[in-house]
Amino acid sequence: MTERYAAAGVSLRAAEEAQRRIAELVRSTRTPLALGRVGAFGGMVRVPAGMRKPALVLSTDGVGTKVLVALRAGVHDTVGEDLVNHCVNDVLVHGAVPIAFLDYIATGTLVPAVAAALVEGIARGCRAHEMTLAGGETAQLPDLYQAGHYDLAGTIVGVVDEDQALHGDRVAPGDVLIGYASNGLHTNGYTLARRIVFDRLKLDVQDRFPDTERSVAQVLLDIHRSYAAAVMPVVTRAHALAHISGGGIPGNLARVLPQGCEAVVDARSWPWPTVFRVLMRAGEVSLGEMRRVFNLGVGLIAVAGRGAVDDLVRAAKAATIDTWIIGEVHSGARGVRFAER
Image 1: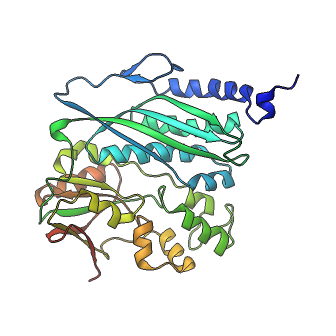
Image 2: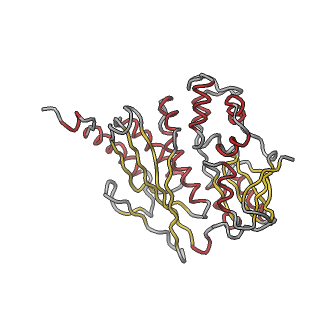
Image 3: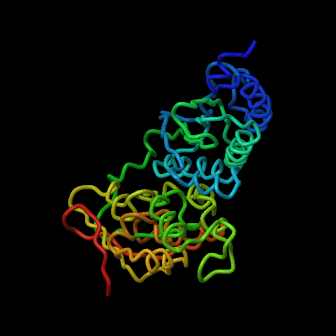
């Protein structure tokens, strides 16, 4: 007899095979903080010892339409690692150490090899941060997603001593802005980038990306950089940190500024990576829109007193991440202003 659930588009056999593959990857991420069994209804982790007033920092995010590039290229593990690194940065800016991660994969037709590749990247990102992949969910939703398509999201749990958490309240006029180099588009602006590359330039993933010696797939699937190694050793030296994701520098740096503080960014203080110059030229995108949509080569900004700048720059250099002094904080209306010199 035909299985009615399978006929409706949901394969229990595929789900079981995916779960088997994923379980091994989950086990590879378990740390001494992990509790309970793999495959339980909920994931458990201990709070690290030695914290006086531990505060949990939680964040949920996805990788947006970057998954459509991954599908087109047939490369699925990199977006899994993107997801972890993006979420790590979102709790890092509060000074938190990541301790647990949960993933959510939703698809029209579950392909166990694809699901395993996604979790392979997620597990790789978790291991790099000594973080437990505490659980997740794989949903088959044939009436919601096109066949072969999927969406990817994750939730992260970090922890920080309450009195060391960064909120931006210590930012003051005279503070310096330190920009940390991004690794390409990271996970933002892909709806616009895809339309420029695939529709306007008529390129495909195997073609050479303009002004580079790399393929379109290589450029567009560059992994979202984690800044944990560059920042955590000296995180208490910063007054604030801003992860430059959707909304660009104006939309994200403003989130950590208190009233009466204006961040003045020297627009010529760092070089734009080639990918952004190509997108701006080929897409005929205005400078203002480029700044609102893309990170333009700066994936994280630290706001710090002048006496802390050397320590922050030195730690980034040890993690092989370039930095630039990109501006400073002035007295004024809360917000971000670009100075063109």
